[in-house]
Length: 169
Ligand code: SF4
Image (cartoon, rainbow, N blue to C red; front, side):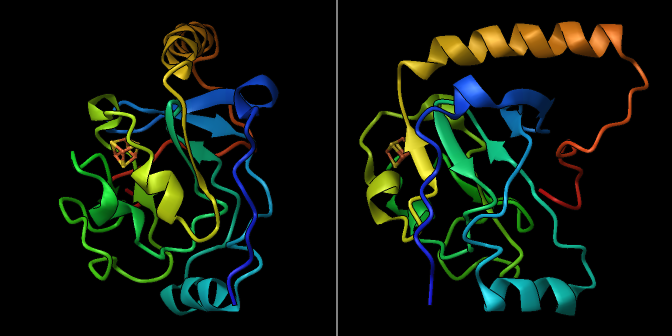
């Protein structure tokens, strides 16, 4: 059974931009215990893969996917008419069943291509996706904030979600 745990509709007021994905979109943290933490299937997939289950935060800003609510259902990827999403662990693929396994996540790798149709928001079974054109400006400001933080804290370690590596996205 999939728990419905919607993405925070005001996450930009509560979280901070903590990293930038290899695709250029922002990652907001800290993460949370979301729908993925409620799913025995997802947690079993992490165990089978030998991966630690930990909060991952929200990926993207104006096309935002709460990775802690994403259970790799995969409905959003083919629903998008302009191909915004790809599987994190199977780059270049966007079919519902083309995920690597249930540890995979739908990443908004072409966030700026969004045409605001809301199809992805509608189909997500856990309501993990939020799309809001008004947040384009928020993303621009957050990018500046992150860049300033990166230049002033070159070697800081934190407990916040990590930037995606080639293995994780
Ligand atoms: S709102 Fe439409 S165009 Fe934008 S990411 Fe979602 S499905 Fe794609």
